[in-house]
Image 1 (cartoon, rainbow, N blue to C red):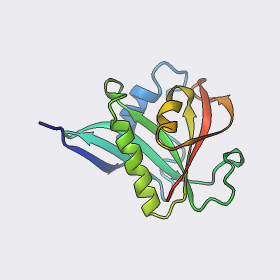
Image 2: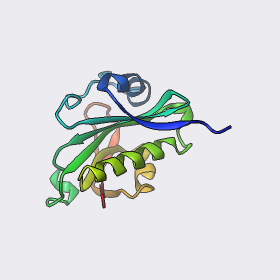
Image 3: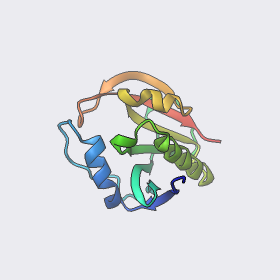
Length: 154
């Protein structure tokens, strides 16, 4: 029997438990609330498998940094807080959520998705059509190496 999979809109608070378990495990930062969580136009999406929330993402309307190389991008959106439960990473569920989110953003008129991706997740983003931009950097909150990634939407 196959699992029921649904991509659903969430509140920011709905994302906090997975943010804590996945994005804040073993890093100095413990805060799971993003300053942008309540901004107008922010969309929080989750993937539920058989009713259980197993992947999350937040989509923040904001200009891409200059190093993204897309100064004329139409309605860019930043992907933040992308996380899949540890025991399900590598199963394709995160990719389903990412593609579902990109489709929703494109349908809403967004022309570019950008993210500050952890280097450990670069293969995931590159495998889903993102391009690497600029030099790597260490994120101030997590103290982990990151790169800027961008993807044009149709």
